[in-house]
Image (cartoon, rainbow, N blue to C red; front, top):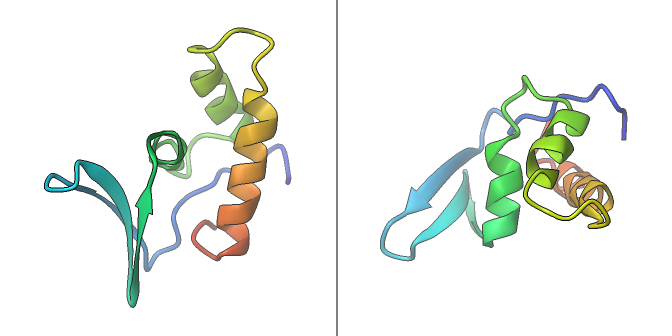
Length: 87
């Protein structure tokens, strides 16, 4: 993963909140993915303006310094990118 990558949702994917399920969803042309709370927190920050380091710093502010936020966020972003959901 490039340190200067500024992840954003692919153009065909939308992030929506489902009030009935009280869950965030990735809505795709032929599929819907229900995100857990941590995944939704990461995806919400993928707006194309923040670098991965910015996202890690913002999320890491709520955790102890020894928490593996950078590793976990990086692995999650790699998986989501491999699915084609992020550009």
